[in-house]
Structures are given as C-alpha cells and as structure tokens.
Amino acid sequence: MRDPQSTSPTWPVYLASFLLFVGLLVVVFWNLELPYLAWSAGPVSDAADAVAIEGQDVYDPEGELLMLTVVSQDVNVFEALIAGIDPTIDLVRKERVRPPDETDEEYRERVLTQMDDSQIRAITVALTRLGFEMVPTDVIVIEIVEGLPADGVLEPGDSLTTVDGSEIVRASDVTAALEDNEPGEVITLGITRGGTDMEVSLELAPREEDPDSPIMGIVVRELTEPPFPVAIEAGNVGGPSAGMMHTLAIIDTLTPGEMTRGHVIAGTGTIQYDGSVGNIGGVRQKVAAAEAAGATVILVPAGNYDEALTAERDDIEIVPIETIDDAVEYLENLEAA
Image (cartoon, rainbow, N blue to C red; front, side, top):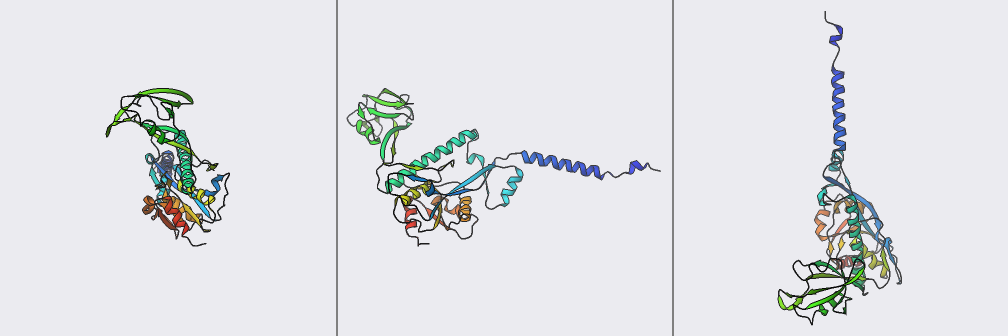
C-alpha cells in the first residue's frame, strides 16, 4: 500500500510558483522604464488672461483665445500598453524631445528660455503689426564665423557699444560704422561682456564676394523693448508653442472691438519675427484638449494640419495657419457667436 503522504496533490505548489513568477514579472515590468514618453492633453488657459499692458487703452476680450499644452511623462510597459489603446495619447521617442545627456534641470531651463524668447517675439510681432515702434536697447553678437577676424576676439553674447568711437544702437549701425574702412585696417570695438565694459581690436578681412568690402565675421541681433510696459505672465509653462496665441491676445487686447466675435477659439504654433507661424509637437493632443475645453475652432500651423486631422475629435473646425496675418484675417471674417 502507498504512503498517503506520497499521493498528496502538487498543484498548490505549482500554482504558488506560477503566481510568484507572475508577481516577479509584474514588478520587473512595472519598474522597467521604456525609451518613450506618453503625450497627453495638458492644462488649457485663456491667453488673454496672461497679457498685462500699462500706459495704453485696453479692450478686454469677451471671447476666449485658448492656449494649449501637452503633458509628457515616462512610461513603463503597462502604461505603454494603456497609451497604445487610448486614441488621445501618443508615444514618442525620448530623443525626439530631449538629448539623452540632458538633465531634468537643464531641460526645464531650456523650455523656460524658449518661452521667454517666444514672449519677446509675440510682443514684437503684435506691436509692430499695430504700428508701434519698438525701442532698440542693445546689439548682441549671436554668432562668430570661424577663421574670420572676430574669431577668438569676440564671444557670443558680447554687447557691441561702439565701433571706432561711433555709438552702436541698432544692428544697422554696425554696417554703417564700417562703410569708410577697408580690409586690413584695424578697428577698436567697445563691448560689454559679463557686465564688464572693455575694448578689443581686430583687423578687418575682405568680404569673399566683394574683396573691397571689409568684414569682421559676426552675426548680430538687435534687442528691443516695447514703448510701454507689456508682459506675458504664463506661469511655469515652457516651450515656444504658445507664440501665435500670445500674439493674437496682445493684438486683441489693444484693438477696439471683439476679435473672436464672442467665439471660443483655441490655437497653437510658434511665432517668428517675420510673423510666420511654425510647427509644434503634440498637435493631436491639443486638438482633443481644445474641443474638450469648448472651443469650436482650433488654429494650427499649416505644417501640422495633416496630423491634426487625425486627432480624436467630433466637430471642432481645424484651420491651417501660415502667418499671423492669416490668423487675424480668419478671425475678422467670423460671424458673431
């Protein structure tokens, strides 16, 4: 006769082993970070609420110009599976968003700097379009051509104050100051570097396409400020994609009448100094967020239009925009809500 103990069922042991194995897999996959980010719709706010203007008559909009954002987060295997079946979430490679060696703090500083630059562009484009003249404040060296005289003498970020004693106020003053010079002549530049005023000298070189014309080998940018206080208070939102909407919000605030005709208008897109509207990331999420926030129209960069059409939506109208003039013209032709 067999020993009763030798015939006891073994399936509980197998089940426990299986459950332990599954549990270990869950722990491993839960803590396994993938090289992807999940993009989902972020907070929505009225761009006009962020605009603060002093010293001018302002006309608070009755409609809304919605500024859209995207939230990105790291994902594990399970979160990636959920994102894969949610039509409002996209998985994007991390390197598409930030370099592999960029720290969280460096990334945060970069996107906040992009927002600061975007706000300057928005203010400049809006006020220039309305006929206000920006006040020049500085001429900054932004690029130095390798192998030309400025290489090793000037640095990006140097502020040019004089050329051979002639004051530099606008970018055009630099070219004008060299008109009477010839290649081979040595000039003295007054600069400000790191808050310290100094003088440096360099020998002018001939311009390749015009050997009789002198060149230093620099690219400069003219910094300006508005003729009255204008600020955009966007909080901790980073990146350049709100540029178009901030531009429209400033124009609307300084213009009598109702640009939105009482509609809730959403939009996204960068703004350049020439008024062109550039592409952004996360347009599919922004379309979904705009409709959820009650917008009837979303203005998107022309380069993002085809992708925007694939977004999860019902009946929100998607309008491609190439320049700020396109956006203003579209809004001006809206029927009142």
